[in-house]
Length: 302
Image (cartoon, rainbow, N blue to C red; front, side, top):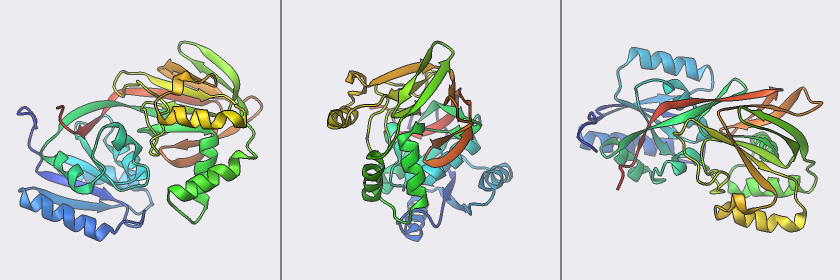
C-alpha cells in the first residue's frame, strides 16, 4: 500500500446470505479472523432482497467505515457500487459469485484469502459507471441473445456454468435476431444484431472478451455489436471471443461513445440484462456514463 493512502481499519462486508453455493458462515469466520489478526474491525451487513439499496445507504450514513467490501456475486457488487457511486468511500470486492466479471477485469484475485490482502495492500482506482435505461450498471449490460439467456437462467432452478451453456445451446437453435438502431453522440448504426453489449469493461464472467483494449476510466464506453452469422461461423467467433479477437471478425463492430439511445423498431420494450439482472425496459433505452464515479480497491501496481 502506498504511503499516502489511509490505513483501512473499520470495514463493512456486504453479503447475500442465501445466494450461491458457498458456505457464507465459513467465509464470515475467515474474514473476521483475518481482520482481527491484522488489527482491523470487520462488520457484516446481510441483504434481504427488500429495499436493500435504501437500507444500505442509511446504514452507511449512520456508521463510519474506511471501506465497504462486496462479498458476493454480480448482484452484490452492483448494490455496493450503486451505494458508493460518487462517494469518497472506496469499494472492495471479495468475489463469491459464478461470474465475478468486474473483479476479473480489475485484476482482483478470485481466491477469498488473496482478495482480503487488498485491505492492507492496494491502490485506489477511479472507474466509470453506467446508467442503462434508468438502472445503475457497474460492469456490462446486454440486449439480444445473452439477455435472453440471463432471463431464462434466472427463471430456472439450476445454477452454474453447465446450466448456462445448456440453455444457450437450446435457445441458439431457435433464436431470431432483432433489428436495432443505436444513435450515439458520435455516430448512428442501424441493422440486425445477434446481440448488443453495453460495455465499460472488457470481459464477461465467463472470460469471453467482448471489448478488448477498453479502459474503465476514460469517460467513454463501447456498444459492441455481434451481427447475425451462419452456424458454420459460430466456432470461429467463439474462438475470437476467448482470444481477444473480437475486432477480427467480419460479424462484429464497436461504437465508442459517451451516450447512446437504442431502439428496436416496432417494439415498445426490449429485454435487457444489467450486471446479471434480467429486465424489460421501455424503448428507447438511454445509456450514459458517469465518469470516474466509483473508487475501487485494486492490487497495487507491480
